[in-house]
Amino acid sequence: MKNILLVLTVLLLAACSYLPSNTPDVTSWLTDYRYRIDVRQGNFVTQEMAAKLKPGQTKDQVRFILGTPLVADMFHTDQWDYVYRFQPGKGEPQQRRLTVYFVEGKLVRLSGDVVAGEARSTP
Image (tube, rainbow, N blue to C red):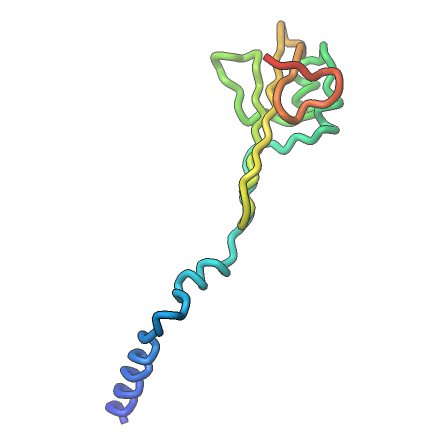
């Protein structure tokens, strides 16, 4: 009985290893249809959130509106960077960036691709 099972197993494995040359590669078919998760990293800042920012606001007020910045450089304490990256399971990655500048602890300007209204300026 064991010999028959062994022979059948070997025959099945041998049959699975044969693929005609005109059939697509099985591994590429499997990788094309596997599930890939969406990866979100950073601070998602909307245009509505950026529109709430006004010159003269304190760092605490900005943090309340936008959240804690992803990058707060200790050498540039008057500049906060809010970076967001979205990598969908399939498709092209998207990236958004907002930089907030302070002078003496007060908001003076914004730059990036998530800036709304009259507060928009470039560095």
